[in-house]
Length: 167
Image 1: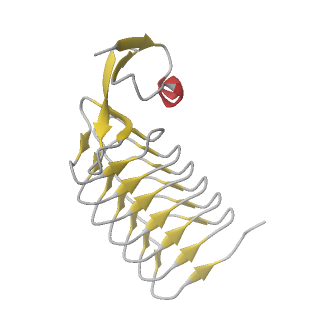
Image 2 (image 1 turned 30 degrees about the horizontal axis):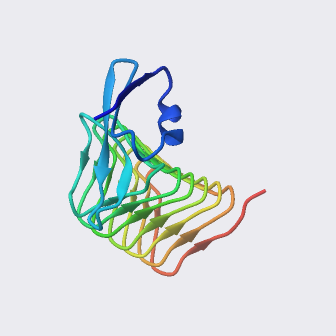
């Protein structure tokens, strides 16, 4: 087992698959083993990645975050804080899930999208580009949120909603 020490968390993304543990600012990280046997991304010691979850090689699971069930975190995605992805949800691209946010069902968060606060994205919702969902917002059903759209507060976007690009 090879253990390396770094000063920045993003440096973990550039490590080869042969590195299975690292220490960053006194925080311990280990590689996740994906269900198919492939080498996954780094999981902080206080975070939880289910054995059935897939964590891409460059994805990060930080703090107390949870990657549960058969969820997927791929690309350069980050799940941090007390956030969780569950029930087959996908977080990919450079997307970030933080705070106490939950991604559930068949929902997909992609691109550079951010979901934070206590927001909930579920069912078959699709969030992408630079969209952000925050506060206590709920995006459910077949909702699609794209561009630089921002949904916050106690908003509910549902069923077949489409929130287009904002300027």
